[in-house]
Image 1: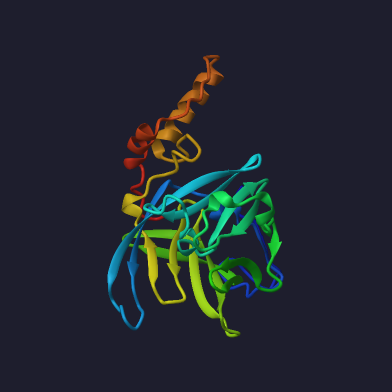
Image 2: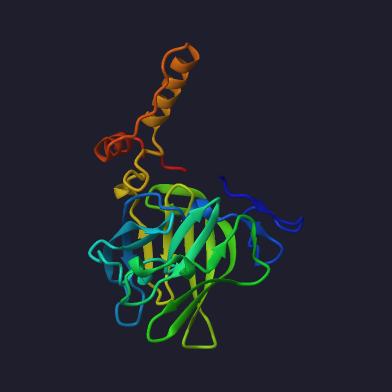
Length: 267
């Protein structure tokens, strides 16, 4: 489902909603878009200003009763005990009927220990930001609370690529203080989280040149010019009375299909 936004007359698309009288559907932005993600990081803290790094993150899934939950962690963190540090929500997520159920993750605890009762933060279709939304309560030796303060739509430039109308979330993070720190994240319907400025000042930007559309998590290719052409061809066959078939692509096929398709510079 495409994102739906309802704004009163004094607002327009691309302006800051400031948390007032605005309705937004977030599911398409939060869903996994690729199995493995690479982020280029620039550090801006006092002790590491200007340093560069690249991190490799992996989407993982776990069964929760009759549902499937997704979380992202470092490629080396196979148990997910540090997963809360790798996403702005710090949560595992269940996507159901366009609603997102979130369970805040705990330090040194594998997400496999989660149960349905842990998914207490609910982003429903058409959630209204009349006040900051309580996104997560991350459990360390202390509690870190994350709130969505407000949002806007904004174009994001990554290298030579311009991602049109990304969803920019302005976050408030309470970390053992009554005064919140600020964090900002940009999400794309096609790529998920494309940029994140942490409270520490570290900026993480998705490496689009290494991005592959989702194959493993759902078992089929979801994008790419060749896939669109194949669907169109089969629809023609269907209209002519020929047999119409849809088959799942192997991951290797998906990679080859998409490798030649991600050349557009304005999305």
